[in-house]
Amino acid sequence: MTPLIAAGLELMLVGMGTVFFFLTLLVLATTVMSRLASRIVPTLDSDANIDLPTDEEVAAISIAVTKYRQSRGDT
Image (cartoon, rainbow, N blue to C red; front, side, top):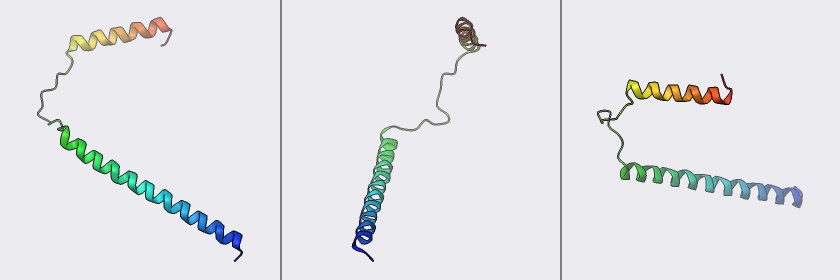
């Protein structure tokens, strides 16, 4: 094997190893941050009281969107 090919293979392995190391580090950091965030911010329960819009609010929003689209020339 020529020295140029050996140097190329060595450079390729070092580069791929570096990328693999940093991607693994990124996955671990993201996992740790996700677990930390889930402990700090509690998740919503399915029984939580969420204020849904009333029928009147939905109608008002629909009318506003329709008028806005008409003013822009959209269909």
